[in-house]
Image 1: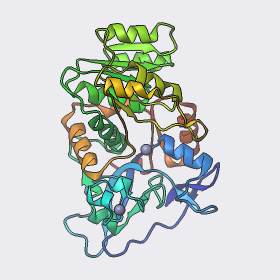
Image 2: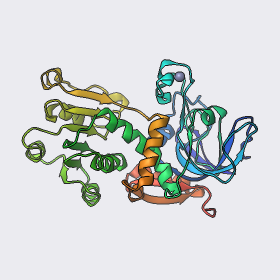
Image 3: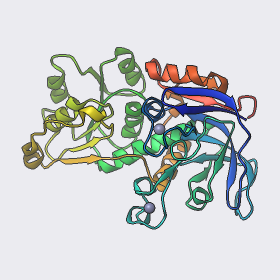
Image 4: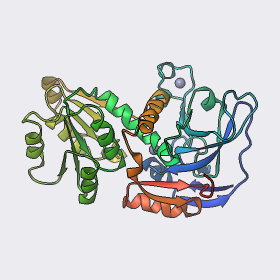
Length: 352
Ligand SMILES: [Zn+2]
Ligand SMILES: [Zn+2]
């Protein structure tokens, strides 16, 4: 089978390898759509603590496909079924796992990180993933591409759940990339009165407006903060999400939030710029809730997929490029340039 193999730092190669064998309780999936994300680019550039130096790894953790084969002992699933897969598996026994947050398990395994991922014609799903409910059948109304994008969307759902949105809240989102735009889509269907998107790229702001942002603002404009205040009745946004890796933006969020505001630091910061200046009295006197999330739980993955199926959100709008697996290098280059939004690889383009 054809795969895009990360052979080491900066080394991505499209190559042919034997398809994986599956054992008891395992499932083989024919990958129909796999989207790229910043994590894939970071692993290619810097490696990952879960990947031993010198080991090759097939990346790709946002994907969907068709069950090709089920191993002995697998119940309730059969070849030909369309499925989406949540990539994180926990140990099953620690406190985080017992709370349903396998994504926070200290011993987590993840497809496309500690295990081979989805930039391949076929992917092996370990028995643990099958048993823990990582695999979900895709409703007929959901395309393979949407089902792949459901993974980052479920992380966005995790982030907005942490913000405890109330009807009538004003939501400010920093960053109008795919993640910011997913926050926009979900925020709009969560009873907010206004969603404000901000970015430094005009083209992204234009798209945000098209996708229903009530206000779009260039965050480098001199009167940016004043405008946000004016758009929020002089009080500031009730909810602020930072969907960009910029330290100053986290500082601004603390300054700009309304009394009793809720903030989610969704985007992590670069390793050498992790420290921010925090006037902690802002949190104290304004009674702010400052939250952070990473990944999503399997139940959030399912809830996200049910929203996608309902058509209240249209993730198709976020797909800017589709490539075949042979073009994986080009796909990574396009994603790196940040020229578009989501880049999707279709390893089995001739199948449906
Ligand atoms: Zn991702
Ligand atoms: Zn665990």
